[in-house]
Amino acid sequence: MFNLERWQEIFETIRKNKLRTFLTGLSVASGIFILVILLAIGQGMENGIGEQFKNDATNRISIWTGVTSESYKGLNPGRRIELDNYDYERTVAKNIDKLEYKSGLYSIWGGLATYKGESGSYRVEGVHGDYQFLENETLTTGRYINQNDLDHYEKVAVIGNRVFLDLFKGKNALGEYIEITGINFKVVGIYTDPGGEREETRIFIPLTTAQRVYNAGDKLRSVAYALHQSDNFEEALAASEAFTTQLEADLKQKHIVSPTDKSAININNSLENAKRFYDLIGMIRGFFWGVGICTIIAGVVGVSNIMLIIVKERTKEIGIRKAIGAQPLSIIGMILHESIFVTAIAGFVGLISSLLLLEVAGPFIQSEYLKNPSVDFGVAITTVIILIVAGALAGFFPARRAANIKPIVALRDE
Image 1 (tube, rainbow, N blue to C red):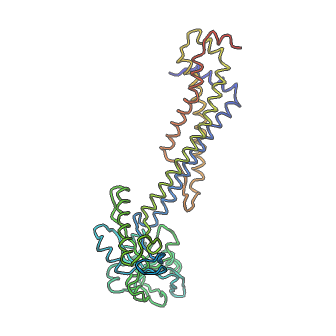
Image 2 (cartoon, rainbow, N blue to C red):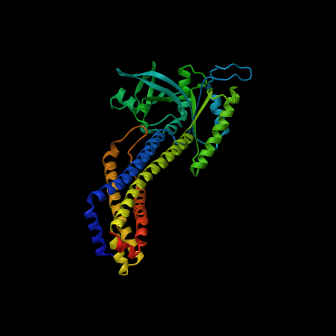
Image 3 (cartoon, rainbow, N blue to C red):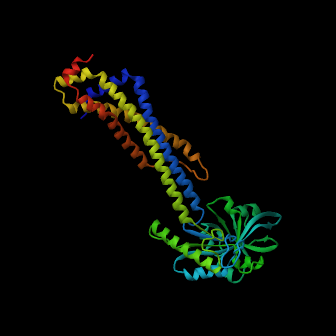
């Protein structure tokens, strides 16, 4: 029930102690402000990292090789391990029911591409048709590499949007021929990549063609796979880890590599990376909550101390109220009312200030691992609940002390 006299008392107390109330409210507002900003930074980190994982298929598994670091079965360390078509085909045959996408890769760094006087140095990669989905690429026009291209060693090329702009200056490219390291290739498609321009400075050609024209034989630089999607993340992660463990063991056995050698066979599992990153974000977010809550507690302690001072100053008044019949619950309600009001108003000021700052500055914060820091509606509601609880806690102990004041003792207070 609305009690006008109680509100008048609250505003009268605030009016008499403007500076004290302002400083107390400032500590609460700062706590909420810091909490919301820290949580927004945590969300921004999640956005940024999530953007990184959008660059490729979320369940991509990439394999490449290096040099052995351990002697094994009479073979010295320092051997360079090379993948070949058999490695790729054997894995596909063994896991055909598990794989959604698959591709071998043979790449040429710094391949010179020219078209009618325009030229540029780009990465040229021989791939299978599924590589489009492993790289999460989108065709803007034309088509991607297909099985016919692979079977007949076709000299066709799919170029990135940056290559298209460099060589063709925005003019039609489909059906045109570009020269790549002295060999003519017909442009059949143009793609964009969520990774941006760096990922769009590549030219894709059929893997079989790349191996033939660059005298690679059956060698591969790397291979990539993506498993079928599972119902939930934990199932997908378990399947992915089992697949990578078995794949690593098979490759090490075939290439006579020590099971403990960490440099000869390299496997990157995007789901494992995602789990590590999001676990880290979870810990960071928990730390941010801890810092914010501790800051709010500091403000709440300040409010509680102020309320104790107010109870001390109003001891005689409280004694008179009790002497004329005021119930303890009425006294407790009076103190809690004022405490919650001061805390809530200060907290809302901090909340609104932080939301305004994020609204204005958030969209302009764009870095590799921090993107558009913000908070959602759920976080805002949570902070409101924290404000109410904080105000109640701040006033509880002073209110209990006020309720326990004996009228005869209070009336003697000077």
